[in-house]
Amino acid sequence: MDIKSREDAITYAKKHNIDIGNVSEKKIYSRDRNIWHISHEGGELEELANRPNENMFVLSKSPKDSPDKETEITINFESGVPVGINGKKMNGPELLGFLNKVGGENGIGRADIVENRLVGMKSHGVYETPGGTILYSALQELRMITLDKDSLRMIDNISTIYADLVYNGKYFIHVRQSLEVFIKDLMKYATGSIKLVLYKGNIIIAGRESKYSLYNENLASFTTGDLYNHKDAQGFINLFGLQVGIESKVHKNKS
Image: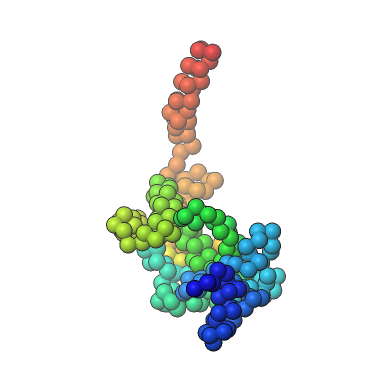
């Protein structure tokens, strides 16, 4: 076949009565859509200086056209998995469908990205992921209150490796599967609810609850409680600063 461009492909489809939906010379985007999101490439997006046309978007309103009022939702999680909205149990497809709808109506989830392909070239795409953006924000807050500092750092490091493996088509290899087992165990206490306010493209955290929350009000309070004695700080500072003090003296004496 001598098809060398999307224009050639459209011409061929018209000639042979092949249904290609609403794709045309004016809407010449390459689109991939699934339960999670929709991506757009091609057309005016191939020129980085161009702003995407508003009529390109499918799942989301422009923030300026979204409602001039707040939308409040609460996402319920069990062991890091979203299981319901506002206390109502939902399976994955139902939950994503709801969040994509309410998020899109409030201008949530647009991302304009230049990315590095596996083969080395850079590409430009615009993504609409209303539900995924909302879920990510909620999960980050749930992790923050239920995971310790070291676990959070481990999650951040592993997430990059995990994402690269999936992006590069290595979903079914053993290391990816092993990482998922580890992450699931790490997230077993990430159960709770995160309240969010959606408003004109913004996601505002409005509340956090978990029976496994590591946040202790007595420790965090500016009022001295029974669990923390400010005098303990002196010994901690002396020990924590020991290495810095020794290094400073050595460098000063040798200079």
